[in-house]
Image (cartoon, rainbow, N blue to C red; front, side):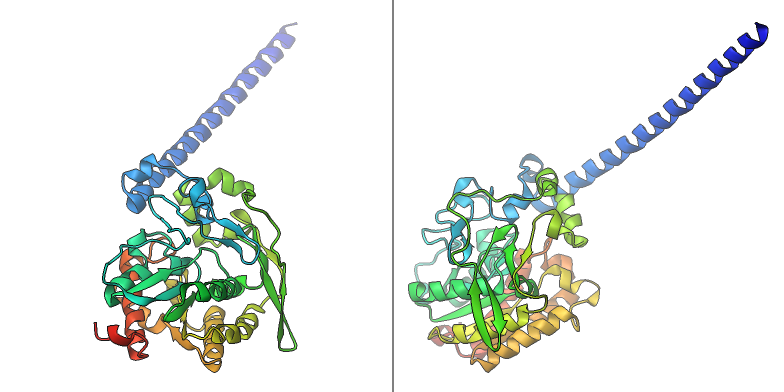
Amino acid sequence: MSVNREAAGAALKGERETRSKTTGWGARIALVMASVLGSVALLEAGYRLVLWGPQGLVNWPNLVHQRMGIGAGGDSCQYVYSPAIGWTSPANCVSAPYNSDADGFRRSASQASLAEPPILVTGSSFAKGDEVGDNEAWPAYLQDMIGRKVVNAGVSGYAFDQTVLSTEQLVPKVKPLFVIASFTPGDIRRAELKVAWSREKPFFTAKEGNLDLHNIPVPGRLGEPVRFPTAAEWLGRFALAELVAERLGLRRGWYFREVRGAPVGAGGTIACQLMPRLAALGVPVVVLAQYSRHYWEDNRLFGTADHRAVGKVLGCAAAAGLIPFDIADKLKSAVDASGAAAVYRTDHHSPEGNRVVADLVMRELVNRRLLGQTADR
């Protein structure tokens, strides 16, 4: 009996020691997790203050929804379904960062003496001016510099094929003096997709020198909600998650889905074969190559596959009689002088970066003698 009692006591003692160790490890893990979460919370708060000031601590919208064109300022700012292009900017959007007029063009400060006819700017988010206010996008700065109306018809997320299709629609309506069609290396790649940013879009396939248009009318209907991956719904309100997803290249599949329509690498060929459609518009077209912050880091821009694709597309633009303008060489001077952080925000240009772009574009327009009576301003 004594042996049994001693054995039972030893077992009980061992059980208590095991529980104590387990409890100790649990407490340590909980402390580490609390410390990590607290540090992340402080980093998130600090990053939001840097990006948006005190308002960033009060306003916590889903950043993925904003980037994809929903929830920026209520229902009036959601992208509008288009059977011909996939989506377009909303008319009469009213929000803090972005506002549009009755035609869906981005608003900017007006001047009574603005010359007409206007310049039409088309393209994706770098034309529209994501991450800055209405008067801080480069088309707005360009308007101030030259004294001629500049219509900003950029739409975030557009692929190169969507830019061409929208430009074809807008030129007869706007009747511009000339067009500036902006694109990025990513816009070339997205021309291969039938679903981009979780949205259906038209797409082309190239065969024996001809283009076939597919997915028209684009599937969908007015007011239909866009469905995003679960990570976008759970993490979309956190600026740090947005930053990490951008820096690690995790957005595709995590924040949005893509479905391929054309083979990998076909985007450059498709863009080249679309150039005659821009040339047929009856007005001069400047094909402007722009770049995100990502392409300047670690000197990765020059010599990359993306930059070679841009060179191919601009070469096709010149061959079609269009006006190619690669901003890379001249923008590099600003990046080298001030650093990427001064010229860019998370991905798109800062206000100062957009001023630099507008100045470079203006100088190119002057050199090309496209501005007429405003050339000497």
